[in-house]
Length: 251
Image 1: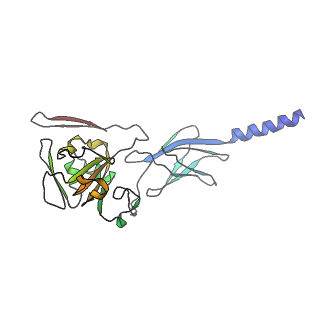
Image 2 (image 1 turned 180 degrees about the vertical axis):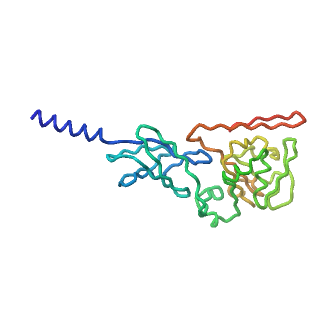
């Protein structure tokens, strides 16, 4: 009887130690933001797992984990050489395949942009990165039908499908929260925006007061902040002029 129990324990111990596991995290190769729901598949095996909300994963298999295949919609698939015991940092590259965009801002409910009852534009992280802006105006003016003038004294003029001016016709938000309280003159609201912290920009062109209140008579500009990155990153920006103006930004 003792020999039988010892044999069973030996077999269980052998099975346990014969399993190998690999840990890692998956993130956007450009923004370094973690990607959730990414499929991690073991090559030549029926084993797989998806990443958690923070992009991390742990995959265990009784078979050797020599290589993994990483798949995610909108990104190029990758085959990664696995090294059990060494954490993997996998940066996925966005695919060039054009897909239908999903917009949340317009109606505060997930829907296709083509089905939204208003004109919406979005500046992606790729567009923001390629622009290499030093001022917000350099980004805003990339949206068709939108024009912004920088007055260099912490003020600006804005036009979205209507004449240029400093009137409070537009609502400026950061992650859905207004940058200025209602009723406060907001033609200098964007001076407080940190360019290095912006992930993308959503613009609703035209009246949107039914959704966002009276300050959205002419439109809405919503700045989406970057999410915490999966790997350590840092950016520093410095602005100055010959009049003594200085500004340091961190991202």
